Structure formats: C-alpha cells, structure tokens
Image 1: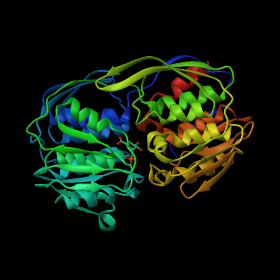
Image 2: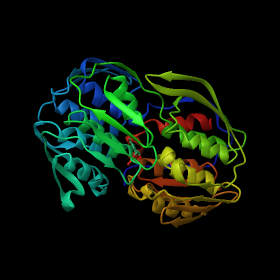
Image 3: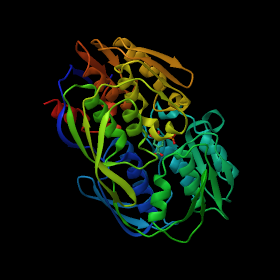
Image 4: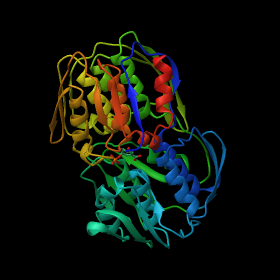
Length: 430
Ligand code: S3P
C-alpha cells in the first residue's frame, strides 16, 4: 500500500482554483510536437506521471524536449521520419493512452520497439488496437495472442484501411489516425458514438490532411507536420471532482478557471445540470483549437437521472465521481451503456460499488453500469483506490459528505493525472 489520506466532512467549498492541464491533450502535444518539423512550445502541459511516460518515451527515441518552467515545454521536432529506435523497452506506466497511441505510431516506424506498463496496464485489452493495425499490415506481438502488454512491434510500411470500431474509443481512433499518417492511401475510422476528438483537432492544428464526417474521420499521409505553439486547457476530468464536491456540499460557491469544454468531453456538465446542479459557464473562448471556459458551481440539491447512449463516451472518465453525486442525490440514478468502465485503470463499476458501498451508499452493479439509490449522508470508514487515480479522488469527494472520518488507502496513484489534488482540496475546504 502506497500512501493513504484521511478526510472528514466539509462545509461549503469556496474560492477560485485552476486545475492542471488536460491529460489527453498533453499526450497528443508531445507526440505531434515530436513528429513535427521545427519547434513546438507547449504551455499548460500536465506534469503527471502518465504524460511523463509519453515524454520519456519520445526522449528515448531521440527527441530533444526541454522544460522551460512549470508546465512549459519546448520540443525540437524530428519530423515524421526522424524518430530513432529506442535502446530499451518503453515503459508506459499506468497510461493506456501512451500505450495504445504509441502502438499505432510505432507500427509505422522502421525499427523495433517494445511497450510495457505497470501491473494494471498489463491487464488491459490491447487487441482493440492490435487487430485493426495488423489489418493495416502492422507486425505486433503481445502476451495472450496480442491482447496484453508487453507488446513488441516490428514497424514497417502500412496500408490505409476502412475500420468500423465496435466501441467508441478515442484511443483506438487515435492509434489508427497516427498509423494513417504514414499508411499508403486513406485510413477511415468509423465509431458508434463520437469519442473525444482531441487527436483530430490537434492533427488539423499541426497541418494534417484530415476529414471528419458523420460517424467517422479519415486521414491521408502527408510529407510533414509543422511545429506549433500549443496551449493546453485545464482538464475537465480533473475539474469534475471539484464540480461534484461543490455541488454536494451545501453553501459552496467555487470558480474553476480555464477548463476545456470540448463537446466530446463536456458530458459531465450536461449530466450534473440534468441532476439539478447549478453550473454556469463564463468567458467562453478558444485555446489552440479547443473550447475553454471558467465554471462557476454552487451547492445544489441533486436528483437521480438515467444516463446512457452517446452521453456515455462524452463523460467516460467521470463515472466514478458521477456515482458519488448519485449516491447523495434524491431518488434513483441508472447508468447504462458504460461497459467500457470495466476495462479502465481498474474495473470502475466493481470498484465504486465496493468502495461507495463500504460508506453506506446504496449502489448496485449492472453489467454495463450501475443503479444508485441516493441517501442523505454517507458514513465514515476505510476504503481503497484499487490503484486507480479516479477512484481515489472520487472517494475523497465522497468523504466530504460522510458522518465519520474516511481513510483512503493507496492514494499515490493520484499523481498519474492530478499531482496537486490533495493540496487543492485542502485549499477549498478552507
Ligand atoms: C483517452 C481516451 C479514453 C479515456 C482515457 C483517455 C484518450 O479512453 O478513458 O482516459 O486520451 O484518448 P478510451 O479511448 O479507451 O475510451
């Protein structure tokens, strides 16, 4: 067990905070900055462990990346064909985005590489990228017939394919788009619901030839990408913990500044508003092709709702904390179509049912979601993170409405996406 945190209930949360940079956009900025020609400067880069795994992987492939200050990086791009064979295995840590996107990119490089990760990542499914990439001509080997990392990749020439993904996954889509940058002909990816589109936006921003259409996206190979200035907005998935924390603690009034509100990510705002949450967007603007706003949130009485369909991919990382809001709402919340939660950093359905249940919440697992009956307050107790950053932070939010102390075990994992979470929480608790 690595670190634990003990928290107690809180009165209203007050003040103004800025959450760290968006994790998905930070990954993509390193990748495209490395593949571009010329300099890329990134501001607002999330210096969490997941993104540092991506950064180190590109350094191991010969890319010069300099840290100029907190969250400010300068990359000397090596061009689309300038990466070098890494001398050792690339360690993706806990980061599924690093592993899956890099599998796409490395499939097209004319060298050999191996990707591994921590005990959680080595359990997660990889065939979802290995299978379509193999159809493009990629040569990838992995444990369990290519389903689990470590993955060994013998990069080489690829051909464009048309792929209909059975799941709405930005990681699958992005792996294929990165491979498609190099493939012969066009690569087309269809998905059942639109997943986050940061890759499409950033590829376009760096000059790629990309077309989005109803139900999918296509890309054509091109000779070069051009280095850019990238400003990374605050991560709405990190803001989500504070949005729910403020909503469930009466008397709260909290301003979360500079949050990315890309429509493919902002499902949490819609869901919390449907539950009766008082959330207002201020100063809406665009940063490097991504919409951003300040979010003002006030303590609210929440009610249960039904969540499913295309709202699910737009809030996929927020279900642990949504389940906390639901556990304290009036009435019943039913979450469906969210079977992907079973293959995240941990099985997030099982984890939230067990940990919220330990604090007296009425939560039941469904195969593809949860059924949650709200209660007036939770009780104190000891819970665990399952090594999953979002479970740890969701349980910290739950503790704000518990009648006794809550101890959360194994909390070091929050550093993967939100290194200063505990300090910020202490700050708004006052
Ligand atoms: C991500 C995509 C999502 C999300 C993950 C980050 C990305 O995963 O859950 O945290 O940056 O592309 P899936 O593509 O597996 O849905």
